Image 1 (cartoon, rainbow, N blue to C red):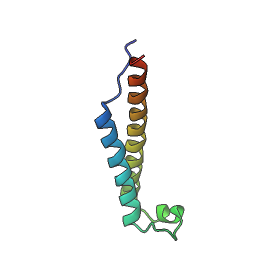
Image 2 (image 1 turned 135 degrees about the horizontal axis):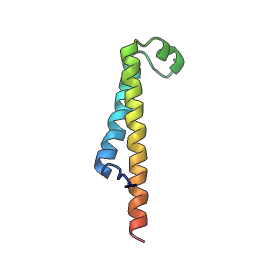
Image 3 (image 1 turned 45 degrees about the vertical axis):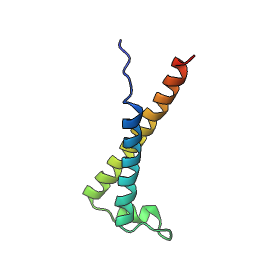
Length: 79
């Protein structure tokens, strides 16, 4: 079975950063601040805003995993 390669390092970094910014923006724009619990903000979100926040978190997690995969692959190739 062929092994899949992760996206390039730059694409991975962009996914990580854009996903994190999207999730933070959605939560901050809908009332998250330093004195308010995340659960309270999450319960006040509409279904569309929740979907955007989850999409941002998924993109960020995928990007971080791809960054780690790229860095470990390059480290192993240099040996």
